[in-house]
Length: 344
Image (tube, rainbow, N blue to C red; front, side, top):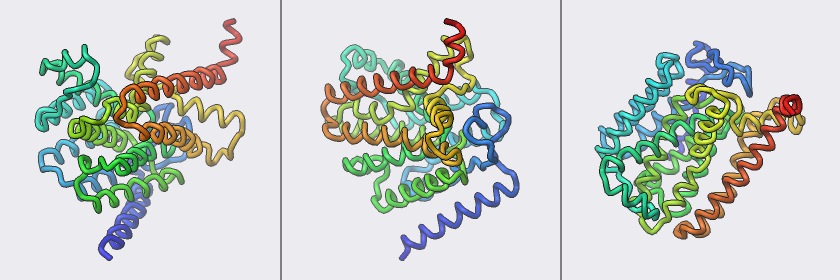
């Protein structure tokens, strides 16, 4: 009875709070950046992260200091959405400082990556700290990059949660199985609201999810050394590779790596579906995100077949990136075919 009551209360709280934010025009999207209106010109509240951080505070059993670190990390994205932290440099520095505190507080150091040269360097504490900060920062900002179509981020981490539960690895994420069900319910509820265009995650939600899952997955590996580290890498491949590809693309086109553009994979796929009129324009945003989610789900299911075999996981990563890159090039050429023909 208590469980059902919780689910009803959280559902009503999310629904009516969201209506209140829209009425008061608080934390809305379309703040002037071109990439925000790429898939939808409808005003939608960026409130997803608010419900995530509240649910995490209530459901998690971590100590007070760690909760405060997560709250402060959430606030970086929150103030970014409010345009208080306009500078990406300030956001990046703030992220790095909080990640550093979290690493030192929780001894979150990598040990065995099964790469001999890298493991040798990780013996040096300073290098270890820098490397872990780099990895977490890549995931956090990559998560923000892929948050451009409905369901893409929420669905991605919902799938990872279910994969961890399937492999009995969720204990390191949250020690209580009842809490796990609540957490998944919150993600599922936000997924539905995001699918129907009722709310977006915003920077506050994507930063928070990227931080909590990157830290948790590192911790899961440290407590399960029989797992291949490349299985963890595969679970986080999408935001990581999207971040790397974005960096290389912007450098290639002489653009600032810190400024957003409209050439991420999900944006190109959205453009393709829209131009080809494959789906009703009202649902293209959500359909695009779920096509990508379906692909990632298939990859993860293959990865679950043998999560301890490093060679197998590396093969999947290489195959995965090859498929992604091939499709990306095709979609990029489709979007800019007129410009390419003109130059030729």
